[in-house]
Length: 354
View (cartoon, rainbow, N blue to C red):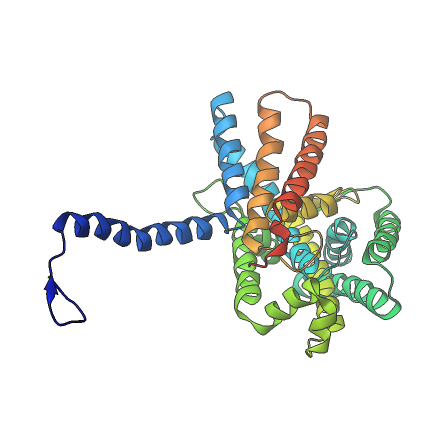
């Protein structure tokens, strides 16, 4: 029964009410499902995560050795060093810049460490600090040249790439520096985790990624980085120190590249000038596969980590099924182009998430 304006009552058909009620009740449920679907699709780590699962399933079906301890060691070790470099590169790319010198810095830092520590007998910790400080100096130079003189970071860091390549060749002249007796510092950076097929760089990867994920998601500096790469002009007008943000991210990128190189030296007990070859491209590829924009302003730390594992899994998986190693680079190049085209077409570079 309902009350009419004239004070009389009118009977409402129960069937009519029953027809309306489910439809009205379904509206909030439909809206909730739509919001949930949009939220899931908006997770930038979803696509690389699904890609990694697909690759793992493919190689698991192709070879029985995929889950062997040796394979797990190889994949985790490669992914760890690429991932640590990719974290720094991701922060820099989000702020709108590139660093093509990280691959040579990856070799330069452990070479300096080994020369000071192994060859000249300087305290291992002091030698490590000096080497990492020199690595940071590389980032400082890249940042200052790029921001003060307005030179594109592509050109600046490409020049630094050749400078470091020459220094690496000058320092060890094509030889390999080997450390036969692991030290405390090397154990901390590259020792095997007891009872597992994994090594310390894997632990460091997740620690470093967690720190930078928190900084990008919850700290003011993370907002500054996103704003600097997204719309530098308005960000600067609102008080964001865009030049300082870029310089800091150049230093972080260089530092993490050098640290990852030292971890690899600690893991394999040797370093050559060829160490880190193509790492600058692999780190950028891992970041892009993980959802970081080539145009700045958006990116995800954990996506870059997933991208690093994706690259490492493909590399080792191709070896296991007997595909020539040269095919790996071609395969990765094709994947990179496809991912970039898909991201641009779908407009995924337009939203910023950590």
